[in-house]
Image (tube, rainbow, N blue to C red; front, side):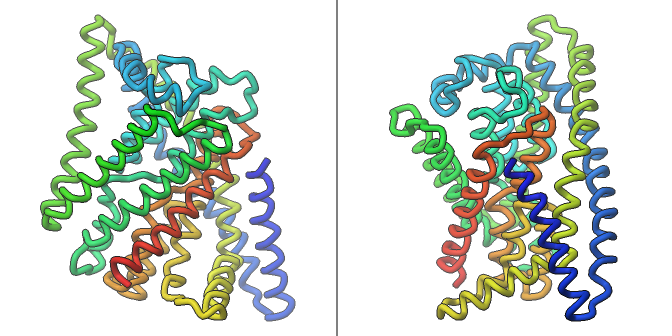
Length: 410
């Protein structure tokens, strides 16, 4: 229902602004731009789905091999003490906990192509436990908030963009970005737990969250000792080696249990193709709404309004130049990436705005895109508190990014 209101708001706001520009300012280019945006966004939605088809087929096929080989069940058993408290509505030892873990791990390593199929697999398994098929369950919402908060330990692509645009030290945003995205994820877990009345003050979860904090601190310390070239090599190699090890482990586990790995892969890959087809309408809907909103100039007006408000209150408005990236990120990953590149091109890769836009890009994820794809893949229409929790996690990431960037580069 919330997505419905937001989607309608995109169109009505865009239409009102375009009508004002036409009647008052005599700007005849707005409506053609909005119509062009609808066609372009529809095409983009189909291309995204088409591009996902092969990747979905690959990873759902691999997941099926792991499932029949017992790896997913083993992960579920190991993680059960934590997941039974964070996802209390999921039966203890259910295979979905293994899928959730692998999705979160892929996101943390920046392996987006692997994370999406694993996430869709987890949603399908949670939907099997859902008694109201059109309504999001508590575990689904907690899982999606973990995704939308965007916890990433190795932001390789952002560092590559900085290097291409002439940054003197492309990796200087690594530690600030890691701190900001960790704040976003932690906030998402806490806020969702409050909504769902999950008690976080128990030994298991406190030890887990404390361990995560220590792991993040260790990674920050280790990477801070490396040069730019070493960091790039280590981060890229680590992600790819781990990914290949997962594939090999699944195949070996299947062989150990005398599973026909090829047939199991084909069975899972068929599900990947069907899932890719299923999400097309949801992608078209959300991307067209976002495209019209941008084409009307509503985003530019929002940014300028924020700048004037900050200056009127006597605040430092240096951060406002990077806000387009922050505001676009929950709506469109490619749009936010374009905003980030534009900020670095306009202000300089080593400017405050250029660095902050990179931290914004890595501190949160595409909330509405994830909600549309993941809920759309299982036919969920009523999202309950998913949007509110996801956006609060995004807000925490944005505020943390601003504060951290002022601390490191201000």
